[in-house]
Amino acid sequence: MLHALVYRTLQQTKPVTTVLQLQFYCQGFTSSSSNPNTSLTLEYLMNSCGLPLQTALMASKKLNLKSTENPDLVLTLLKNSGLTQNAITKLISRLPTMLKADVNKTIKPKIDFLTSLGVSGSRLVKIVTTDAQFLQRSLENQIIPSINFIKKFTDTDEEFFTILNQPSRIFQIQLENVMEPNIALLSDNGVPKHNIIKLFMLNPRTLASRNDRFRTIVEEIKEMGFDSRSPMFIQAIVSRSGMSKTRWEERWALMHKLGFSHAESLSMFKKHPKGFVLSKENVECRVKFFTVKQKFELSDIAKNPVILALALEKRIIPRCNVLEVLYSNGLIGSRNASSITSALKLIEKKFVEKFVTKYQDILPQIVSAYKSQIRLAELKEEDGIYKM
Image (tube, rainbow, N blue to C red; front, side, top):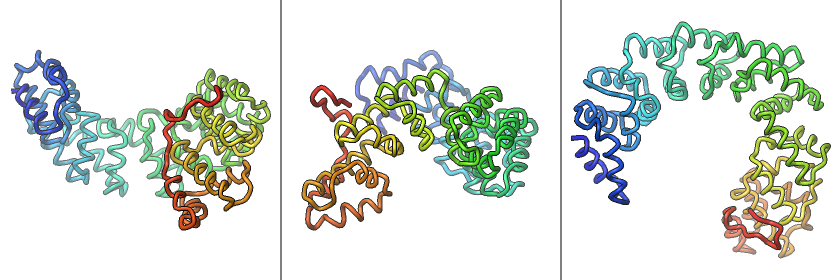
């Protein structure tokens, strides 16, 4: 029965590429195919929960349904709570054992609690699906203490719900024991509450760092000369906390290798901390593109480090193509790092209005130049210098 179900499903979807691939789907479950529960589980996951075949096969390894009575109750409650079929499919894919949870003891109390807080509709769905384990966590020991901590710290409903919707560990840890000391440390160092709340809203994972490590990072950022009252102080902490000590040291070594002085590297980090979390390959590619292709000096990049964080294929290269066409036809001023940088930093709408729409009647090729998105793999080595 199991093999028949798999074959039937494969025939109804996209064709299997090889006979070996078809055999692979079935052979992994040969040992359990004699168990009728296996077929029931797989069929329920696919037909009632909407899981695709491969996902259902993996999920059925963690689940063994003997009846559909309880799973039906679970799905009914989720649907009545506002979850769409797509949301339910996503939830069950990540946590198939939820189908065996006690509806009245495990799932419904959490939903009722959220409803009592005024959480409903899309907000409830977001909270439940962001943390797949949420509905199976302890209400008394994990959810309520975390909710109370967040409500105590935030000033508005918007802040409160933004934090709840973050995919973080806020329901896995004791916030008062882990986050509260880190929040107090920031406050003691002069970080305004609204900046701390913003950190909590955008990156609660950072505040969940080990207290000793967090304290060390704060001291490092202070020693670099950041003003604790500035939003950049928070951004620097987020970037630094996302890197191990080894990777942090390697990043400074890379900047030196690329030709930046320590002062330039420090200035770049202070102006745009997020740029330091880019991969080694991304940093190298962008620096080489600007210095070799666009004839920038390293000092030009150091003045505007934000350009290293821009998307190379989708933003930098198409815009530079457009500018090159305009420069070569004498339609805009002289070609220099400052003008290119300014153009790259414009929002999409402004760039198109200023450099594409304005000239497309005179130079129709300007549109195709902008639409061209050269893939990194297509860029060839030139003169033994530049390769991506």
